[in-house]
Length: 255
Image (cartoon, rainbow, N blue to C red; front, side, top):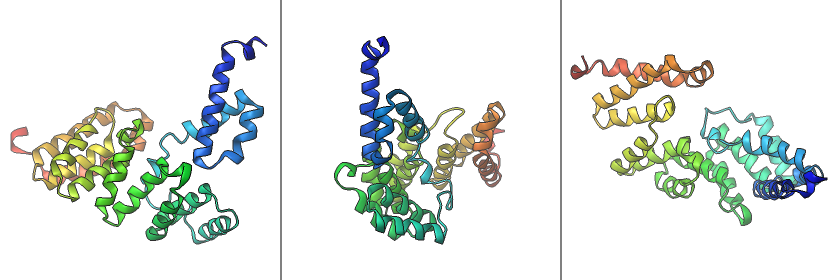
């Protein structure tokens, strides 16, 4: 009894409110509401793990680890289309839009994402991030920039691929200095390997091979000091960095 009527009571209520609002914004309230209300501690814990912690980078991942990471087969898309026709909800719109984007139907994805940005979901983080991907794929850089600015202050944006696409969009609209500032903001030892790799490419395009060489070299110097999981998850960037170093060669002032 003390647990429910002591100070923990307010923590539990706060958790329920947070989970309820978060679930509502994501369009999944019908699925979670009973668990959150009738099993406040366990239900909230399950929700936080399933929908918050596990999806902490939800607007980063789809930006993308490559086409096909999201279910995108013709059969799966047809099923999602049927689900949306039967139940026109925010969640169903976004699931289908994600599948369209992964399958390369970018125009259809954009239409659905834009249609989903209404009411309580008018500034949904995941949808805006997915639109950044879609617009970037279509080289609509001018439309990437304002969306990225809306997400900019979110803590997870700093490490996201959305941030990379923002920097690249600045470069592609002639704002090289601003683009470089964004890349510099994504530098960090023993982390940010994809971002640093992209920064190296940016420097090469700008004719700054010496600085690019240093970035790629630093990345590879850090690789042996990482844990196995970090090495595995960033293996592609180390491999790409090695390829770029071969192209650059060894700058004279580094010998």
